[in-house]
Length: 117
Length: 112
Image 1 (cartoon, rainbow over the protein chains, first blue to last red):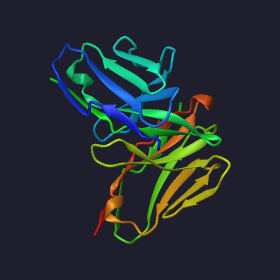
Image 2 (cartoon, each protein chain N blue to C red):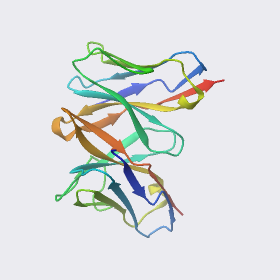
Image 3 (cartoon, chains in turn orange, yellow):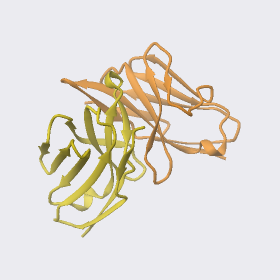
Image 4 (tube, helix red, strand yellow):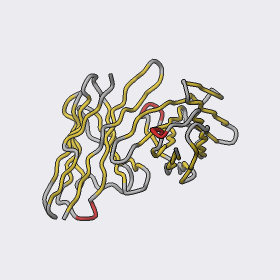
């Protein structure tokens, strides 16, 4: 159980276009999902917290108009990188929060490699 | 602010034990986690420990927590080549939000 998928796994787009990345919880419902960004050989940086049915909460320094997040259902959150530029090239990873007993666990998707040319 | 530090690299021989260390700064962390990341892949939750525990063992994995020193370690017994990966510790902050702050990651290389 607790499987999270992401689609696409890899995408190459031209500068100025928009790209949508999907994050799905396959066998459970997730009211809260998280979006992270990882640069090569670096750690994960939390971008935003996605809450089902409400606006996402963005971390300091993350442009909400640049990275649009929609969490329209309990199993799907989407991240849209608008007007992408080469500096947006990165590995984007989502996670879904699950209540396990008295604690929360986060299960991560396999990641999406975005390359902007 | 929150800061989680790890050593960058650890090399061990197959069959030996590996110990990966992590220090954190937020004393209000409720849970601390260890994740494994293989090349080009997402993160796999290995184990976690509640902040009022000192030790947790799960098969080959042993987590030690020194809350006074804000030090967390992950010991992998009988390390195998398949354990080669990047290991991230993470602390949970923000109460019910359960935001995770990740460490810098430790690359574990297992030599046959």
